[in-house]
Length: 160
Image (cartoon, rainbow, N blue to C red; front, side, top):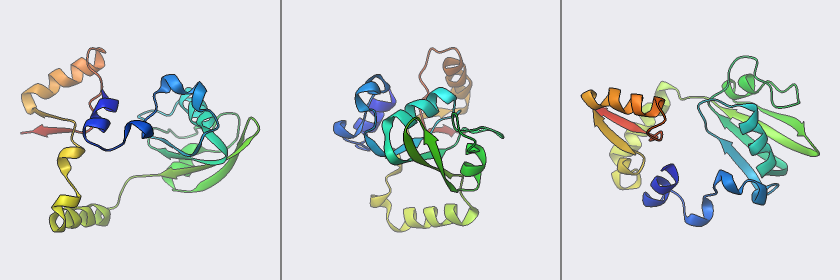
């Protein structure tokens, strides 16, 4: 569902999207691998590291917990992410740059609102919203995701 959404909204082209089913065929391919997940498990780390080329960068945005380490290294990925640092890690025979991104400041939100107001055609919000529900439908959406009956929709606007 997210793949179709990204294509429908023209966020990426078909050539820019890869399925996790293609991980083996894409090993050691990418300069930058972005990890944007709710929880960064060792399996997700391994997949990201396998996709990156030697000297590549893994950008971790979200999903870490205090004390989380990068695979077999001592790199504290939670600290790297929250403090937006870059740290070198070894994985198999590769050197990877692990870097993090953490949230936004009030000024970042204000700037984004200003840019949206000044240049609405350059920041079409409908391209990033994947679903809209009213408050009454929100519980059904959450229960559907929790039961596995509905894919996680991405960015949801809840209308009150």
